[in-house]
Image 1 (cartoon, rainbow, N blue to C red):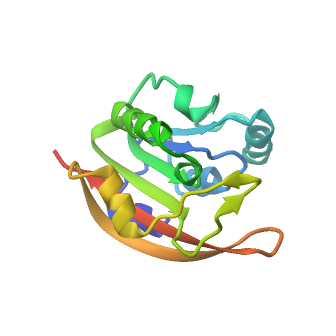
Image 2: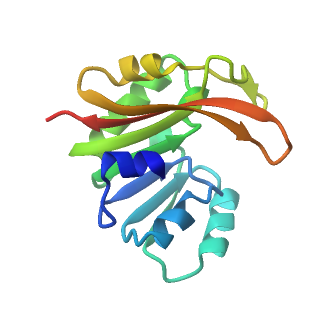
Length: 173
């Protein structure tokens, strides 16, 4: 939420949380008055957890889809990703960046969280790629200006500590 504030994202902004699943970000956005939130995840079970928690009649679009084969039908002011990118490799990263370009508004922003260089090499049985803030910035390229970067020690429900790198960036016009 701190990175959202640093980017100056208004409550009427269109926000997409890719890989949002059962995350509580949607709850916090709604508590702050956000009125155009989309949560995309490939797991209907994870999205159902969030839907049940958030309740009916809220301004949330729930999309069950695998991110890399998704075709965005609109543009968003903020793209939020906590822990999708670090599962991707090779051409998958290129597809991710193409989707980001297609889905993000011309003056949009991104908040991106991925495993840090000292983070896990594997998660949920999948190999991960680890990133320093500079590597995430290079991946986004010159078309983005990094506004802030953070390091976080995330405590999983199982008691494991995972190091994350976060960046907040704004698309350059």
